[in-house]
Image 1 (cartoon, rainbow, N blue to C red):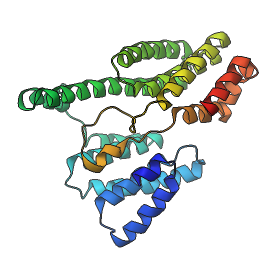
Image 2: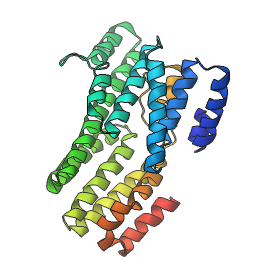
Image 3: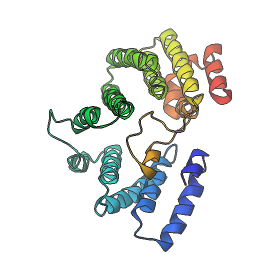
Length: 284
């Protein structure tokens, strides 16, 4: 099913998992995989279909979380459940699920595990663990920044959005220079958010420049030859496939063509530079 997902045949993967689960209804690995595919498949679907699939995915994640003895799988189930509740604006339940994961402030078990690895493992394994932990810390900062940007959009604080995105892009540049290529996708998303903020302030020259930056990062991400979204592999077995690659170009094109952006970018849609961006997203 992972292979089908990477080939864009998500519905085939879902059908295969449903069929297999009819024979093995208690198999937690298959149940988790079905829930994950259902969750990922909600992108660019109607509101009704998205709610239907998220509801089914949530029930399956909860089924696995309450039964599994695999701590990694349980953690991912609660993480997905938290995300689904946040998407559905059910913040009380999101807090409940997140509390199943939350450690006390100032307690960083992953950092401690990486430090222990420095003493217990071979030099190569120890360095690998430490770099992974540092990369995840950077990703966590960017993840929080994404939610902060969403909050600022809700409150129409467009100058603040442009500033937050600019800071994130500077930090991402440092990560890219260090070889953390998964950040190309994060950069594309922050640059497009910055472009949207500029458009809403009617600073269209800045907006189209930010869109060109976003497009360049999206194309760079899609040109990578690794299979996973993040160059972070701290899990084993089937859990390696928790974050499958999704085309950043297709993601950006879908964003630009949605109704909201059509309105926001209306004044620059006839600009040759904007048309060149659309062409590049479709053909790179």
